[in-house]
Figure 1 (cartoon, rainbow, N blue to C red):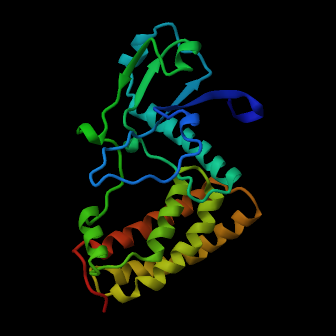
Figure 2 (figure 1 turned 30 degrees about the vertical axis):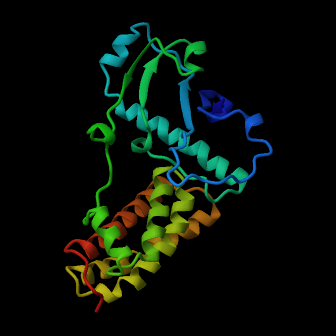
Figure 3 (figure 1 turned 90 degrees about the vertical axis):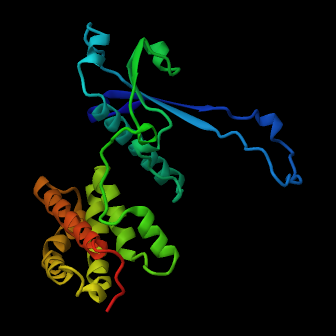
Length: 263
C-alpha cells in the first residue's frame, strides 16, 4: 500500500516474479562445467502492477478509448521509481536503479476489479507502443547519436566527463521529484562542468556557454544552501531546473559537430 498526504491510501503496488526456478532446485548447487555453446538461459521477469485506489466512473472501457494512455504509464513508472528509490535507501544498495518506460518488455493500461488487477488480470486493457515495436515515447535526445559517442569513448577518441555523470544524477533527481538532492548534486555538477569544459572552449560556442555557466554559480550555490536547511520553494526549483538545462545544453554543444580533440 502506497500512502500519500495524511496517510491516505493512493495506490497498491503488486510485484510478481515470473519464470523463477524453485528454490529447492537451487540449494546446494556447485559450479558445473559449461558447454562450449550453451543454450540460452531463461530470463526472470518482474511484473509490476500499480493499482489506483480511486474507482473509475461507470463508463469502464470508454475511459480507455477516450484517453491518451502514455501519460498514465509514465506517471506509474514515476511512482514505481519512487519505490525503487526508497528501496535503495532502505537496503543501502547503490546498484538498485530506477527504470524507464522504454525498458519495459510490455506496458499496459487497463481496468478491472480489485481481485483481478492484483494478479495482473483486467477486464479491459490497452498495450502501449514501445521503441521495440517502432513506437515513439518521449526521450531526451543528444546532439551526437549514442552509438557514435560510445564508439568514440571506447576507441579513445573521446572521454566521459565526470560532470556528465553528475548531471545525469541531477536530472534523475529532478525527474523523480527529489529537489533537495538535485540542488546539492547540481552544485557539484556545475563546478565540474566549468572546470572540465575549458579545454573545449574554442569549440562551437562553448566559450559563451561557459560564461553562462559561471553566471549560474550564485543561484545554484544559494539553492544548495537552502537544500541543506530543508525543502525548496517553487521559485528555487525553477532556478535549479533552468540551470540543469543549461549544463545539459553545454554538454550537447561539446559534441554537436562531432568529436573534437581538446585544445
